[in-house]
Length: 356
Image (tube, rainbow, N blue to C red; front, top):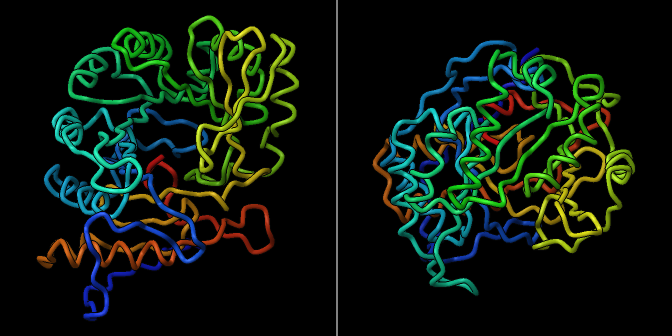
């Protein structure tokens, strides 16, 4: 049975909620929310086995650039400092460069980082990055992360199910490095039996190309019913196998809310991150919130509740009302996910329709 999300619209507000610009976003568990993931499309030109059933078209409508920017502005006024543009595949949006160019002019309005530029990043599969890396850098993009699930062409294209995709991604990564968007982060979702034989190869890649490789545990967010716990490759196995490439040492986190456990090779060449939401969940320090391509706020990847801020926008809401709505949504952010526990239910949307 499909588990449809609860859609929360909440278009009316009492006079007791009076959000001020630069008010901090703090949930009921005391976590400060500073990172916003914005899915600008749920279209994708790949059909990765851990994500899609094989269809590539959009399932949900997309907002206009003006609508995205107005919503993002209200999030920033409430304390968001980092905006990551995702999809689907965000590079499929023709107006993406214009969106980045506008965001790059914004400054953080208050708090310890007041006056600094908004941190703007993109997560992409890299297929179209070769031609867009320099224009995105020129527009003001801060960083780029490329999803790349194998270092061998045959394995890579078995995962993506798109012939000829591997060389395009390699060229895209190198173009991003050359454009000054480095060190590029490369994300690999590990699936036992699909691409777990690529771990050592990624270690060599990190050392050779000067990129940051991050391994991500397979989560139950695919459109099909592929996921099971036996397919998850745990942290210790990854570290042990990478240590055969060259000895590793733990690195300090860049921030308390950082999702990746960081490791460096002891000679200083290359960095590895391991994101383990299944076996070593990091919910207690979560600083993230998501906006889907059709204008729903999701407070967790595994939420069963969506907050329909776009419905409010269509009704002609003021910025004051939009900020009040955001505050209400964040206050209801879940304490944690429940992957692997009895009674766990997958969210109705898959990753491609939520935003990475």
